[in-house]
Length: 166
Image (cartoon, rainbow, N blue to C red; front, side, top):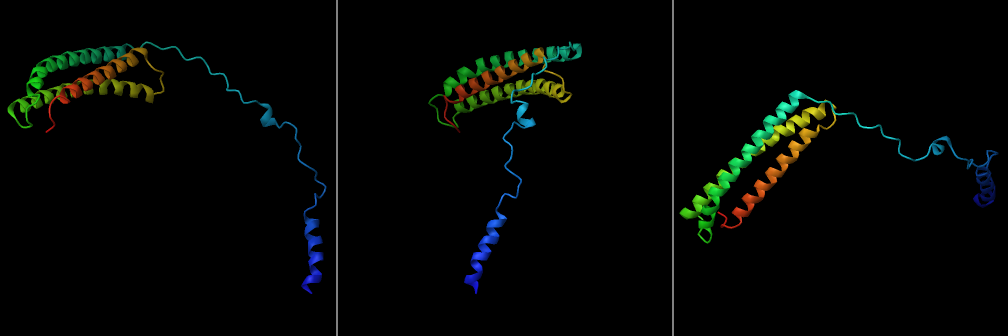
């Protein structure tokens, strides 16, 4: 009996697959496709408005940053002969300890510069949180702070590389 019903079931299923008079979807351009894919024009950036209070804070921070750089350079000049004397010395020797102390002073000087850089970053962060555009003097100060910290880190690393690790 199941073999006799198979052709009838196949006809029933085939009828379900017929088009039903709806036709095929249109291949015409749809409204979403007609808009195009080009980026919208961006408005020109707003003009930077002078901020005397921010300028004063930036001046204070950059002055402190310059002082940090001078202090670090002086400490590096003092550390260089001590590190030179520790070359080839065993870790734990007196010369090695003196060099490590000088390097610790350099780290402390770099930490002071890092504090000043953090102050500058805080100023930039506060400005960004309020939705204001970049302030050129502040961006210049951030660049100076980053360059100083990178230079100091490279100087410490170069001096540390010449003496044995503890």
